[in-house]
Image 1 (cartoon, rainbow, N blue to C red):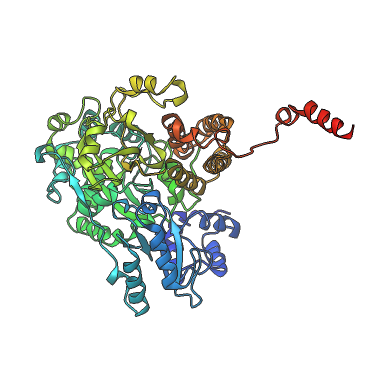
Image 2: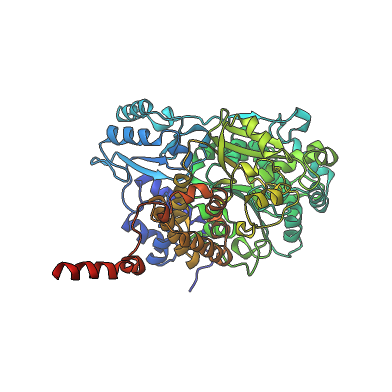
Length: 605
């Protein structure tokens, strides 16, 4: 019989406690934890092995994770990896004989503006060089503590508008946003957020006020608010900078949101790669409790109860999708669900739940403090305000930019110091691959036409004319590549990422991304044919239309964009343009058959 007193949402905390102590979760640990939560061993194995940072065998007292994203590769990762291997005497994926060091690779860790980078026991080390690697390993071997020698990641805030037009990165007085609790009822705050046209800043862009309204109108004995701080999209680090620079705005945004929707419990789902931020966030939460802003009977126009805790992720890109994130918090595999119910109807523990991105929640106290009318003056009519963009790659000034919606991409590239730009991955690996024919588009939500299929355009001139007035909705990541960079090499890195990060629950996503990856291998080797490009388009449609979540729907975007926008790249490597003998051709083989037979007959005569 199911024991209703067992709280599965505590499972990941227990797993982390064991893993931090032993650097793995062993056979006996699985048995004990499964018994504690009344699970089968098989079910618990399924949960543990779903997450990147849970190891089943010892991973080394000092577990090193070297970032393998494309920006890291282009910033000197190869030489840094060789230095680690030389200093430790092991290869990637191995643990030293004494069990002291383990060396592994990991996807983007939110430090793309400071590459190459790594995590050692989830503490950050940035701007690595071979020389720095040798010094780090020497100090660790000498007994220095990791926390004593790790780096404090730079915030690298490169640009903001004039102060009266800046939303996020300007001085903030702690508790100032909470004065609005006394001025407005929950319904009035929801209406103000609706009028601000604030949309989700994690990439989905669903109207925030509408989501809050839907949640509040669903009757329940308890409602939940979840901050999605699982910033896993490669190249994105805006949420990390917000958490470092102005975490008060997140806490106050959550308090205002909890008040508005009638939630009594809030959670920050913090990605494992940002575990080094956990202690300072917990200290900040305690400060708010001490000041009567969290806990019981919070003073407001309508007094309410609300508190916030931190739930640690364990490394799974797909948990950025809200239903997968909720399943993860419930102690399950972080797999997305079908949309029979939306989280605002049945979310965490089956109760109405709002999931908002860090940037979205940080915007709320800022908007209320500056005033609705002033906020609506910024940006564009449909997308007012400002947007945070994480910039990395081939530019003079990588870092964090706060711009008003409506800036042209060409002007933005000039702002960041990008020269001879060949292409850009806009919104990370799941976004668009942009070429110079996109540079006159605006970064905004204006004139959106939905998911365009590139093969509906006759040619690039037709595309340029049709898309010039279509805005670029920015999720947060801009990775820039100059003329020296290899398009196919970048696409291979993207494809490897999606094969690894697919949760596997949707067969077309699991199998399709694997097959697309093999197509890229084939093309890179010069063995591809025109039919491979057509099959990529056809398979991409299947993956996009049948996948449950955004991973499958977006995993082939960059590949299809590149095929359309860089035909010269693909044309030069297709097998008909090379000396590769791709297949036996009967017609070619028999064209001179009669001539050969006649010559042979003549010889015998």
